[in-house]
Image (cartoon, rainbow, N blue to C red; front, side):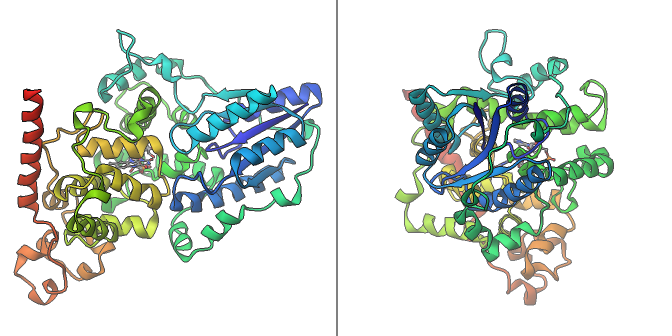
Length: 483
Ligand SMILES: Cc1cc2nc3c(=O)[nH]c(=O)nc-3n(C[C@H](O)[C@H](O)[C@H](O)COP(=O)(O)OP(=O)(O)OC[C@H]3O[C@@H](n4cnc5c(N)ncnc54)[C@H](O)[C@@H]3O)c2cc1C
């Protein structure tokens, strides 16, 4: 009998229950195992994300080959290719790791239908979390909707986090089916995307793959973890782990990362506790999307239905604001620096993500879904759970949301978290020579007029737009009182 291990976002060899279980049962019965990634260009997360995917698949393919295994890369319409593979190789069992959100939801549903029709056993492995989603609930049995109680509950149960079987995988023990040449190369769509100059530019900032990811964990723990709690909000310091894309692609299993940190007791004032808390936000985002799948596209708080006008229905001025924001040309240095960092590297510092999202949704009054869409296409770590939660949180309509009447002031934030302007100078060539403290708001400066004249004016007046936003939320409040 042949078992298919269908990979989606678990591109690793270690800590992989779906793969380990398939191999050990194949070894006992002299069965074959096919490990495959299906690439359907109609069902991808986003472009920058796909560029990373290309390198991650090639890395995994090489590592599997080194261990006498093979990664089949199958391109085309998912339903058609999946059925053909099952039928051609008389596959009777499929193992996969459950993934949340688009496009995985659709693919998993399709696989379920196809397997049912053929009497093939489709086994989901729900292991991408510290603890199963269903087991972390409040005393009334409801899912948590606020982070801190969720985090406290998670920490109380941290001893239940299951360790992994660390036995190395052995592909030599299974019956062999050779990978056909057409599945032995990177899918054309990914290859074409990966060869674009922008993909090259982004990926030169990263070392993609499982081994490289673990090296990065070690480097972070050794050199940056002890300063993390203090430095993590300062974008110029590169004080965070930058592991988000590795976690998104499952090059690292989040549970393995957690277990590698010791001691795990959050009451112990260790440097690790602050980082574990941040990792727990990822757990929270995933739990929210699991329990409330509609929030991928609709506000978590129902009172915000209709609060945001879809971008396509907004006037030209708003379309222009959006385009300027995407290009990093809003005239507010901290916002533009963040958007340039995103464009150049496929990643943005968390504090700056919050600021650019606040400017877009509150100052420019643009639907959070438009911002989420741009992030989805430009972030290498674009992740259905984290991205949606981040956007809804900032927009004020999400779970555990920042109060909707509170707006970040990007100038004050810039002065506080980039006091010497290092981050601004790094990403904005027009400010590269500014030494003045007024770098955070050059248009107010008046000093250095020669330099100032080269910097753009803000396209949205921060104070006036703040007032407009507050009036809009006040009107929402009034409407609710009247209802
Ligand atoms: C508007 C907005 C959009 C975002 N979109 C994404 C996204 O698409 N993908 C993504 O992985 N993160 C997203 N985040 C969360 C966060 O910004 C990134 O996870 C973080 O910047 C990644 O950097 P790091 O790996 O150095 O994080 P570290 O500070 O080193 O944290 C370690 C890990 O914890 C997790 N984590 C940290 N902060 C958060 C958070 N606030 N929410 C959820 N998980 C968190 C990440 O997996 C991260 O890699 C978004 C945040 C905002 C405000």
